[in-house]
Length: 245
Length: 245
Image (tube, rainbow over all chains, first blue to last red; front, side, top):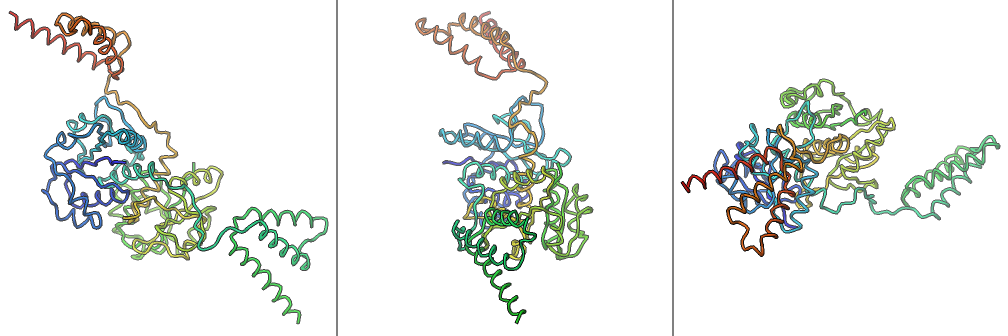
């Protein structure tokens, strides 16, 4: 799928431009435009801070104005911390990137405007946008910097698109134990614990055995785990026999 | 709901501790613990960078070890960029914070471990965790710094919990136009455009009128917008009449 373009409007510090480039590329976005950067273009500090994502800066389009930067965009979002007295939809980053994916999938082109560090976007920029993005921050402490805002928006783009399983099990060269292996483990423990007098008193023995079987069944044991438990029990038996000698 | 505790393990730069505190508080989290900070505690650079979120540092628990830091936690996540050859579930930040909410709601206590800047968590830390969190970054450029990792995890906590409508309309002192107002607007335009000879040729007039009515119906017009359109049309008529004089 084609990507939205992230447009930095009148950014001030080169460091922040570099950090924004890194944040974009962290989540696989590489189309950046820069409108009227305060310290000119190219910007050495931006390049220094972008380490690893410098390509985005090399390829970034330099624009004189926001209208020029959004010329080819069919839908524009403006990121802004606060309402500005304009009638306009306010969406979460989540909803915005969901819409962006839908628009890009239909052949449209989405632009996302990010304002300068201190002041944020001006109303004359915001009126050009179809909707504004507002991050659901703590109202007591809403300050997000430019690169953080870029990071969260780029994260939402990727989160909703990459087919990442929400949970996988890292198996470290092993696999889950089979039912037969668990059964044998249960047998081993039950047999040895029986000999050791664990199931006492006898009226409670059956319940204790059920609980122990349930434990082995419930735990997500790997074949390696099963071998460890067998080893533990074998060693305890060996140690007990040695003490008896 | 009670909150998870974010545990910074052997953090190095005070700046990063301060930035992590800000990132937590941006999303309403304020329970931090710090294990073995390299430059001692309290840390002046951390305090300087935390501006506005300094309370988190004042109240942060200083711990000598990870086991001490997670003593009261019933479920522990370790954030780590890469698999370490340990059999352990790997979850997305989204799933992790979903689980954390469920655990906290049941009266449990969740801890999230964040490793030192360069090296990340050691295996001896990770084995203490129930699961690892892996952010779905671009595999070609996976580097996230400590504060960014904290920011994304805290964002997911808040995103899933705060009852934020994904889209609202900022109305700027107006409200949407009623059906009657739209009908009158349609009448006004149709009448004036009829006089102006807009609906030509007559065989197409009906279709053109339908399209125009559809346009007024489809646009999300406010009462203020309706007044603007009325004003536009009135002005054009006035201008035309003046030219005729």
